[in-house]
Length: 217
Image (cartoon, rainbow, N blue to C red; front, side, top):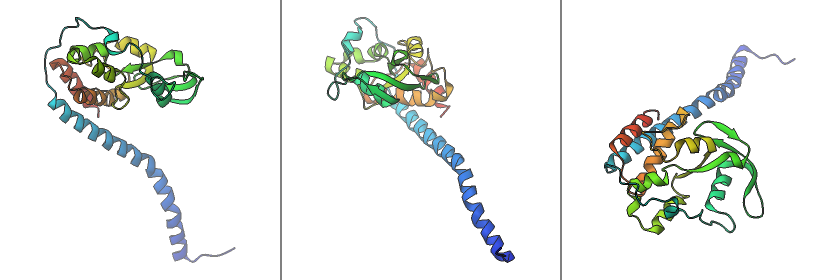
């Protein structure tokens, strides 16, 4: 057996303790990083929201889903935009020859559900098409409305459970919020980001609701 003098033993124990301390601190550091990132996103969203015009909602007259989206736009060969979103948001997604998902696992951030069938999920428009119509999209060209409905760049399309998508419908944040409170910050940030990019206005009640959700950031 090798005998260590006391100073050597102290150094050896110190060196052993460092990695353990670093490992223990890693989850906390990651959590702090997420909180900072969320806080920064919330602060930026507040600035963007302050720049949006506040107005009364326009009439729903003339609205039709087909005015935005006769069908999902094609993207990358056989795949439609919907199928691209399902593949992006899912895990272990398997597709058939026509690019349609036949197997996979999807997590719905609105309600926290894990879903193992494509029949149980929907691709949601964060800012609903009918809501966008009343926020200024009724004045757009058909091409711009189609681009909005199939936007893969902004956070407008997200895979969620069919049940929460039905419950949400065409409601704004003043009437509906994700059941899972932990998603309120991201939902509000996404909503504001989309509206700012497309220069859609907000109503007074909508703005208040968004500010309340941003308090969770």
